[in-house]
Amino acid sequence: MRAILPLLALLMWATDIPAGAWLRDEGEVFLSFSQTAAIDGDGDYASVLLEYGLRPALTLGLDAGQNEEADRQGVLFLRHRLDRAEGPNRLAAELGLGTSEGALTFRPGLSWGRGVATRWGQGWVSVDTLAELRESSTTPVLKADTTFGLRTAGDALLIVQLQAGDYPDATPYLRVVPSYVHRMNRRTFVEFGLSTGAVGHDPLAVKLGTWLAF
Image (spheres, rainbow, N blue to C red):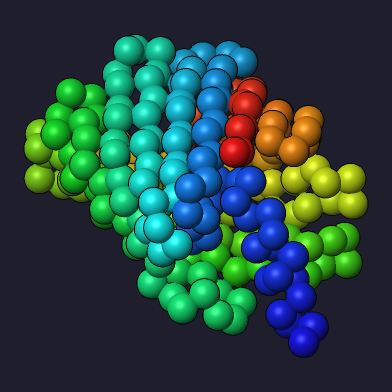
C-alpha cells in the first residue's frame, strides 16, 4: 500500500505539469510559455507547449519554439499510453510531424515516468527521449531529458532536469536546468529557473515561464 500512495498523490496533480509519460485526461488542456535568456553569450530561446487530452489514452500536442537567430521549430504530435494505468510506472510513445530549421521533421519519442515518495514530499522521476529525423540530414538529432521533481508542502514544485542532445556535426551537450514553479491559483503556475552547460558550450541562462492548466 505504501508503494501505491505516492503514485495516487502524483496522479492527482500530474495533469498540471508537463506530462511526458502521464497523459492528459480527456478534455484537459495544458499550455506553457517559456523564455530562456543567456546571461553572457548566445542561447536565447522562446518556446510554447500545448497538450490536449483527446482520449484517456491519447494526447494531442504542439511543441514550438524559436531561437535568437530566428530558427523556428514546430511539431504536432500524438502521444499514446503504452501501460495499463496500473502500478507505479508510466510508459508512453509519441509520433510527431512538423518542421525544424526549415526542414520537414519526423519525430518519434518514448517516455517513462514513476511517482516516488521522499522525506520531503511526493515527487516523480521521468525520462523523455526523442529522435528528430530531418529531411535535410541523414543523421538524426537525438535528445533525452531526465527530470527529478518534488511537490512541496506549499504546493510548489522543485524540479531539476538534465537535458542531453546530440546534433549532427556538433559537440554533444548536457545541460542542468533547476527550476522553481509557484502555483498562483488552481490553473496558473509561474516558473523560475536557470540553465547551465555541464558538457558543451551552453552559457548560463535564466528561464522564465508560465503554465496554464484548464
